[in-house]
Length: 112
Image (tube, rainbow, N blue to C red; front, side, top):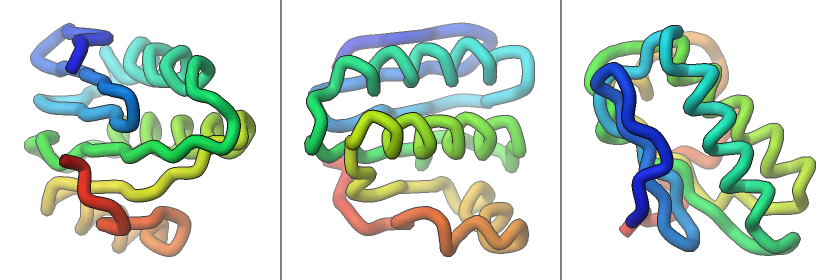
């Protein structure tokens, strides 16, 4: 995997089919992370599949969910299918409470 962004205790890595986030995603890094993910998505061919893996995000973070929603929107615009989304337990709880779980393919693809 290649590192796309590393800042303030957050790390964004990517391989051919997966964006993976680890650490704490606060509002200080969310914009840069969203942009790095958008650039990566723009390089994916139309019709391809990707997985977003936020299982390494330690704390509940609405900033992390904002980044995830931005990537999901960008993927749809680029005709890239989101095959699955992996969330840490705290992020999964926040996603369900916010009613966003129906918008995302949670756990639909293995992010290995």
